Length: 384
Image (cartoon, rainbow, N blue to C red; front, side, top):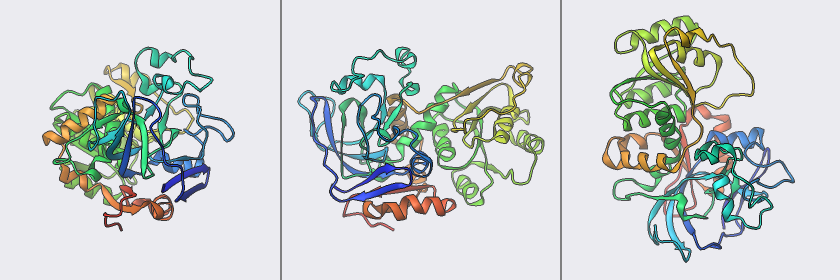
C-alpha cells in the first residue's frame, strides 16, 4: 500500500509497496484512511528525532514493534473490516482514532517481552495520557494514518455523523482533543474568560475547545499577523506582543480582560519564558494557568509569590483520553463548534505520494503559510 514511512531523523520516505495491515486480534478493526493531518510532533521527529520513536535498533516498550513505521496520528476514515469480537462499530462507520499507546495496550501484544509488565504509576491511577511509556499510533507505537489502511483496537475508534462532520474536518478532531483535554484539566467554568498565548495549530484549536465549553470571552496573543487575522474571523479578540516587554504585555492584556482585573484562565500554547510569565501574571485572583506547549528540557525563572499572593493555580496538560474525542465530536455535532469555522484551519490537502515535499518540507520551509496540511490516499479528492 501507499504510505509515508519514518526511517530515521531526516529520513522520511514515500512507499508504494508498504505491507498492508491485516486484522490479527478479535478486537481489531481495519480502517480505510480518508484524511490524516501532519502535526508539529511529526516535524520534530523528522528534524530532531527519534523522540517518540524508539532509538535505532530498539523496539517500542509497549508494542515491541521496530521501525520503519508509517507516520500520522490525526486520522479520519471508514471501517472496512472488523474482528470476530467487535460489536461497538460496523463496516461503513466513519470514525476518528484515539491514538495513544500505553500500559493499557500491553494485552494486545502477547509476543512482547514486556507483555505482563506492571502498569506505570500514571496508568495505575487511570491517567493513561501521562503513561511513562507513552507512544502514539503513527508516532512510535504502531503504524499510523499516513497510509491507505490502518488496523487498531475497536476501543480506540469513535464514530461520527458524516452528515454533519465532513471527513476532512474529522481529521482535525485529534488536535482539538489535545486542547479539549487542556481545557478540562484547567476545570474551566462556563462563561468565564480566557487568554491563549500562541496562535499556532494548538492555540487555534484551543479557541474551539473553549467554544465547546461555552467560553465567555477569549483573547489570543500572537505575533504573526496572518494568524491574528484568522483568529479574528473566529470571533476572538487579538493582541500583538511584538517588540513589547513582559510588563507591557501584562498591562495591556489585563486591560483587555472583561473587568480589567485579569483573566480567569490562560493557556500557554507557545512555550517560551515570556509566555509562561505573561500567562501567569495576567490572571485574576484564583485564576488557572495551563501549560499546553512542549518545552525544551531546561528550567526557567519562577517567582512563587506570584501564585501565593493571589492564590493562582499553575498546571499542565499532556495528550488526551478517549473522552476528549467523544466530547469534542459532540460539541461539533451540536453546533457549539461550527464546521464552517473548522474548515478555515485546513490550508492544504496533498496526495500521499507528494507528502514529503508538499507536506513535511513545505511546513519546514514555509510554516507561516499554513495552519493544517492534510494528506489523503483517496483518488477522488482534488488536492493542491
